[in-house]
Length: 510
Image 1 (cartoon, rainbow, N blue to C red):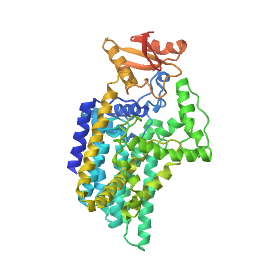
Image 2: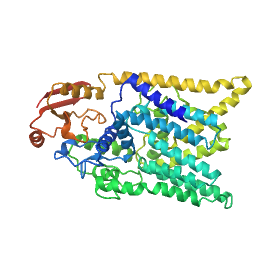
Image 3: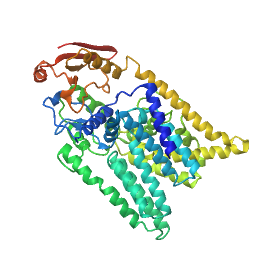
Image 4: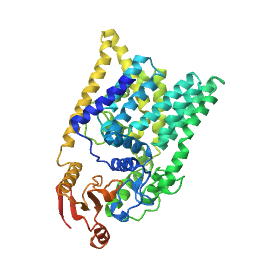
């Protein structure tokens, strides 16, 4: 397992050295980085800023505290990296631990050499290039939680040792702090599976002690989560995500829920984000044909983002199919194998559970990473058995590893080009920030967007200590409403930044 961990860690660090440190480009990344900065300063949340209306952005709470809306798991990972030297170090470590967790899970099903292969392929697929290892968006944390739960469940099915309840409880805690809905689904599936297996044995293995130890390991997270909620939202039973939804979202979390009352928005751009882009997903699923269309689109989205090389946050990819698509081509022979049939059943049930959500992003499937890697390894075993008669069986594993390594190199090459593209909006944002910082003094930038500027290219994000920044980003709210923030930052150089699609940013004195 140490070999798998080091392979992933060294590989991720090497890719970063080649491509450069990742720049946040997705709303979620900025929110997670805010959480990491907050935790690194020894705080759970920040006091609201006096000028908070100018700093509103997607996925960030401004009231009653200034904080990320997300569960603390990914933020803690990034904060641990920041303590070491850079937030991306936490990303590397989480991706390396995911490869180890997948290998540990696979040891419950497979012999050591096949589990090792699964760990190595996980390191290549998720632990070096792509969004799980080279961005702040996350995925690995949920994958770790899922692998621990499924690995413990498989071992509990074979022997009911109390010690196996500990990884089960830890896995549940990881998901509570990262992806609670998916965690609940996985937990219920696991309990159902163990109960079914015990029923088939007519009593079979006693699970009481194991589940008790799992509860002891897992329940400790709930007082911590309640304290976290109370500090951020003021209510131990209300998560930051729930509060942000109540304050900002025009669509419910589940497509079968009634549409909530539309909140009042202070910024036309944020209103469009919530009432047009987000609400569009909900509106499309309010009839059977729309829901079926969106349901069919979800696996296409997952394959598009994860099926071609390492996972990507964007749709830019190398267009060479990765090993993750192999089970789709071998689904018939896989269905004949008990292990694979079991894994396919878990994937299908989980996917059906996710179909109740209004939104879908491929990393929602992260908790199934271990199971999908089991299907990948089983696919390679099927391929190897089929090629045995042709004398080519021994080439399967080296070719699989080599091909995955090639995909890592191709994706890394693409990321290097993207990170150095002067027209990419995050590069433009960093260029403006560096230019102003190089002038000395401190600055306030009032950002004004044209109607056609992309909703997902968001410049107004700040650190946990806004007033300590050399360059503060704020929304331009018009001459009258700007008077307060202009007076508040009277000791700074004040600029107006105009953003329009296809046009370089225009910076001028205010």
